[in-house]
Length: 368
Image (tube, rainbow, N blue to C red; front, side, top):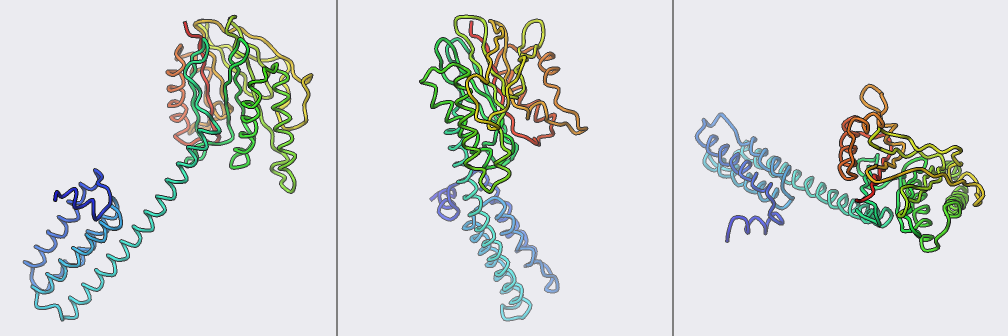
């Protein structure tokens, strides 16, 4: 039987980190040899506890227990060669090593169970994100698309930011939004809006009708959840809804309090402001007449960036906000995946790796 197969039986599946097993084994051998050849007044046996302690840092509880047993065996050998096992000193050392080895193994077992639970929770979060935030296609109609999502919570995969895309008559329809707040309540609001968006895709609604539908979905969900919960009663969603036309170099949009998109052209970066932004969703029960569609140009060779306020409100070490427009002007990127990847890395670098708010980004370009 090979060493790898033998260790697999004791310590679980073989991993490259198990190559580190040579360190605790070398400690056992070295301490044993030195203690045997040292004067009887010098006791190096207590150092054997380092072997199972080091093993617990990279291996499972079974392999940690095996190394602990080897360390105890080495201590027994030292005691036997140093005048017998019945002396009080050697018995105390053996008993202490047994207790410490068992304790280290138990602690490693508890840690492994927690790591497994965390892995299961993270896998569920990833699955939930894929259901809630369906990955955007790299190409839809004449558009090339790239996106990125960063949750403010380091252990989370999803948050209160959202985006979705769906085909429409002669256009590609997109929504990007930001739910006020964080946590499960924000995720629930995002799920409601995305579900309403996808559920109405087949109806070919006009942009005002679709925005009214989204607004009513969020509003009635807020009313339902607000009973006894002041935080839910104050919830709202900023949203940007737009159609990028396939047969014309332009787009139509409705902005409900969301950061305006940026258009990157050969002449620089232009903000696509609307004359009268509508109220964020969830504050009232809206009707179709509450929304006005505004048009903007978006032609070949240009890049459109949609984002949430987590980008422009990200603070650097000195408290400065992230200079998104300046960065886009300096980079002059024309490829959506390259822009999103560069923005992702630069934003994390600016914020020192810690974001205070969720971040969602979509980059669009017309394919040749």
